[in-house]
Length: 505
Length: 97
Image (cartoon, rainbow over the protein chains, first blue to last red):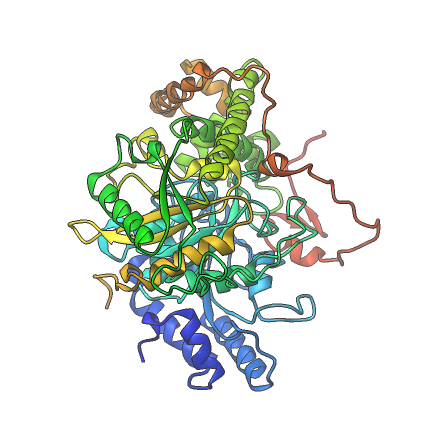
């Protein structure tokens, strides 16, 4: 049985029917991780720990104590702290770090125990590669080298959750966690032909998720189908008293609308999306969008129209400005968050130094990579006396305009459709020399983080070189279940998400 | 932004840059800030800064919990990744002579 081509939903049925055990599934994926190391998708694997968890999952199943995800293997982005597996955020400064606790996301999904009676019973396969501290759009900023794109090994997997995307696309894990501060779930999902969702800010706990930009960071699932993402998100999200920005109304069955028509009472199976208004922002289809990406996204819009949706034009006039706004606010928050790495309590400490100040400085300089150092410096600068108003406060004011513009657009439509990224996965090294060129690639994803809105990436085609293209669905606050419903209906009428990465054995 | 500024913010960030590294990073930071300058054209008079997406949705209630011990002692686990320690304390270079 080729389990790596199987959805989580079907795998769960096979586990429940005792056609396969969690131990067999876990061993199957561990073997693939071992034989397909070339994708550089994982940065820590511990077969012994994984199999121990699988045994526990199997006893839960045989004792009739299993939930719908019990025994399914999962890969976690290395930004989530885990007991057992090392946690480094792909940074040298955290080389070898062992966390004394699990992130809430890891606990929610993991094997239930005394501290965590409601764990979903999933088995951790290991920690996936990423851009250092989630800063990057190509995974090339990892201290462990880039994860490669399973559709073309000379192309980037996207970032920052590039290892999670490569792991699922290469069939090394059935599903994975990611985090998205400015597009870090959606863009690698698009580049690797996967489905991913960044929920509304506050839906998923940030406790134990190594902070990059706290007012933008949000975790979510990356998988093969909208249905798999809905199942995982239902288990991931919860109200968490240990995260002061966790929303009190976070627990939800995100899969509840999947097989329903958009409008209640619609009995026409050919037009399940009748009544849905899909907004196409003019600014998302302007100069800079590759022609082949535009073509695929427009075809996806047509398919939604065939399923009964109505297409309307909307405006998001500050789309371009989301880039400078983001690249002021995110580095400002990062410079503050990353001040904790000082070589005292954990992480790298320089071997030689004159005094305490010198120890901080040398440890940080040796431990952080070039892009992280750059963003810390940008953040420090915009928070400096004399620049604070012109940069930091101005960016926060435009952030309010961007959030308001979305509300104006949602008066005209129920969901916004556009591309995830201006182009398909680029070649390794193609954009890594010029940071600004890489920042410009985030144009369609940044604004939803600034506003805190949920957004998805859904496979919708391929370019002439057989590289995947993703469409983005953006919903209003708390509309994840509806976004997943639209994506699921689209996937019932298309097969882009079923294609197997061409370079994977 | 000038070379002096780069060295100043590197120091404020507790990062060390050689003169050569500062010269290499200067044009990169200048390129970022010329992008950032585009914000100045926007009229934001009378607008409140939005520090947090939740504040756009609702008042952020400051959650308070009962003042009681909720964490058990994990000293050994918390110190297991310390670069230098002695007798259960983190070791740093001498600060006071």
